[in-house]
Structures are given as C-alpha cells and as structure tokens.
Image 1 (cartoon, rainbow, N blue to C red):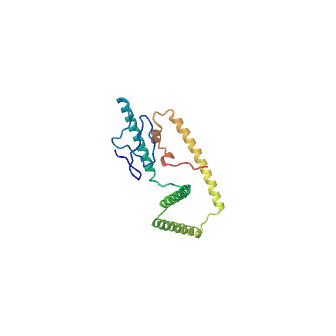
Image 2 (cartoon, rainbow, N blue to C red):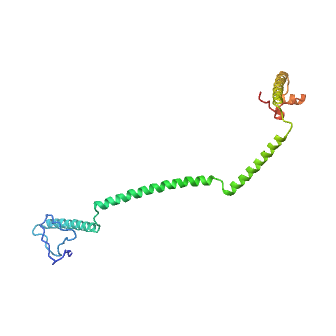
Image 3 (cartoon, one colour):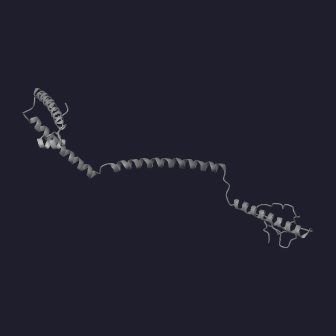
Length: 214
C-alpha cells in the first residue's frame, strides 16, 4: 500500500529489524513501507510470520494515532481569556434564567388570583343586589323610627320577667306530667305512644316545640 508523504520527493522508509519498535513520526506525516519492500532477513518461517504480524499491528497503531492527531488539529485552541469570557456568559445567563423563573411564579400567582375574582358583569350584578338590599333595610329603619308605639325600657323589662316566669312554670308542669305518665306506664300493657293516643295527650315534640333557654 503506498505511503503518504509530507512534501518533497518520495523516499522509501528504512527497514525495521524484526521485533524492533518503529519510530513514531510527525502526525499526518507517517509513511508506510512500499509494497514489496523487504521487512527482515533470515530466520525461519514461523519467526518471519510472527514478525510480520507484529509490524502490521504497529503500523495500525501508528495509523490510529495519526488519525487522532489530525482530527484534533481541526479544532482551534481556546485561551484562558476565552474560557473566562465563557464563564462570565454562563453566570449572566444563569442569573437571567433565575429572574425569569421568579417572574413566571409571580405571574402564575397573579393569574390564579384573577381567575378566582368576579368578572365585571358579575360584579355589577352583585352591586345591584346589595343596593336593593340596602334600600330595603333603609325603608324598614325609617318605618321603625316613625312608629309611635315604641316600647319603654320599663315595659321591656316587664316582658322579660314574665317570660322567665312562664318558662319556669312550663318546665315544672312538663316534669310533673312526665313523672305521672311514667308511673302509669309501669302497669300499662301497651306502649307509651298507644297510651298517649288513647288518652289524647299531646307533647311538645309532636309540634316540634322546645323550651327556651332560661
């Protein structure tokens, strides 16, 4: 296989003795022996085959190293100043991203608040209902103030005293009726409900009435 040259006339590479390491050459300028060139002298058939295999592996390693260096040469060298500039840009962009994220959170909270608020038509309807309700209260208050049958504090106190008196009597009579009916029901063969129906007793519970608080 013909070798590649780095300029000038083509020269055949020197022969490499069997078992010796080939000299590495400049990346991109590795020469391979021309076809038919002798690679060693003397030795048996097995030694010659082993030496040929070793040299082939070595040439493959050199070719891979050449491709590596040639590929690396395609990229420009980056200076420390360039790296520092890139670091500065990263810091600036990171701060900008954090600021945008905070703004997004604020706008999401504001959107949630606005979504739960009343719309303009709903607010106008609510205002009209409140005005109507206030007008009703105002009319009621006006009528109360215009009335001539106001209750004096003395009359009010009298009403409270009578209420307490009647409620007390109510509890007393209800307790006596309960004790009496329980005594009768001890020897009565039927249920309490049947007894009340036969006698014609009406209870507070039948009319959903409860005693007021004392």
